[in-house]
Length: 371
Image 1: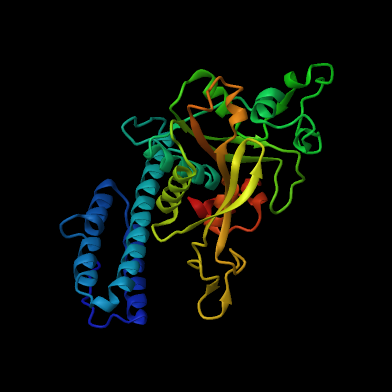
Image 2 (image 1 turned 45 degrees about the vertical axis):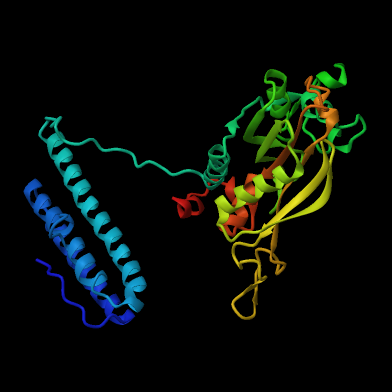
């Protein structure tokens, strides 16, 4: 049986050799497991809390390592731990499958054997990113809103201060359902182009204060390419109360970005225009890959932020008083802000992905990277 050697040299070459010998020994012992008692002895030898091999290398290698080598040793110990756990789990599964085959051959089923379960998957990177950002706002006291994906022109455009001749109402930009031509414009059905209709529906049902974050799927008549998709996801937010100012908007988004990307993240706001907010702004944050320097190392340019040090992330602004007229709020008494961001854009920046279509192809080889 394998015994843990004492390390006197913590160089990468020595660590590589020691790790290779340990994993090889684990695999050799795994191959020798033929019965339940063999498996129990094998598992305890490697994973027992008091004197198992994993405990011994943690105490004998990691804790004894000099300070300058602890990081490398820790990484190697984690790799060894993962490999040993997989090998032990493989031995257990192999033993269970062998017992099941034996029972089937003998015409009897041992109901005490553990079942063979299908391995569970992991969250899709887009859903994982969306849930993580929503969790940030939930921690700030926001509730989560939801609404229909098939909306009327009224909720998608009119109530959000889009004028009748706005280009977003054109079928070149918006996907309308067939057979709507005879209906009044406000009643025509379409696939929502943003999650903003949920803001209107929420304010119709609820008097201020309102603090809501709205994740969901949206649709636009875009040709699919590396940066566009006709179906994608958004996270929007709305806060309405008395005495809400642009300072509250900036403080909220700055805190959210620091919570999500790290405390060293800085934000920048530049003037913009949206029909349903006034004033409006585009928010950018310091590139989390290069730290805002625009460079990786001494000379390599940062591809993620295109060497600018900033990543444009979302649009925001103070809710236009005209919007309050559609929901019965008094703009003289309340004020608020709204913001919206694309989840795919956020995930692409977070995971350094250069083609949005990779999220939708269902290629297991791509998705397994995020498991």
